[in-house]
Length: 91
Image (tube, rainbow, N blue to C red; front, side, top):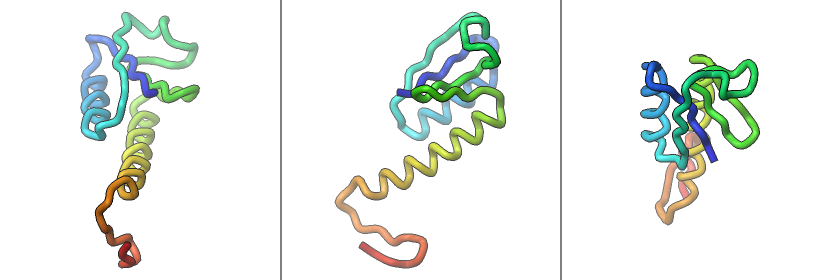
């Protein structure tokens, strides 16, 4: 399960939340007052994916980009439709 830790005073939090919603992945939002409620060295916004933590704009952007690739690949093989891969091969 993916958890997004945000607070009300964070414009980047809205962007991260929108990114997760656009990917249509299961996640939960946890509003917190400040980073003292997070593990040491982690600050708002923060993503917890199982036992991994991501915070800071670049780290979160990298995480969302990798998640996007993973979701796209996973969904490609989860339907009864035919697809053409990058090499032009079809199902």
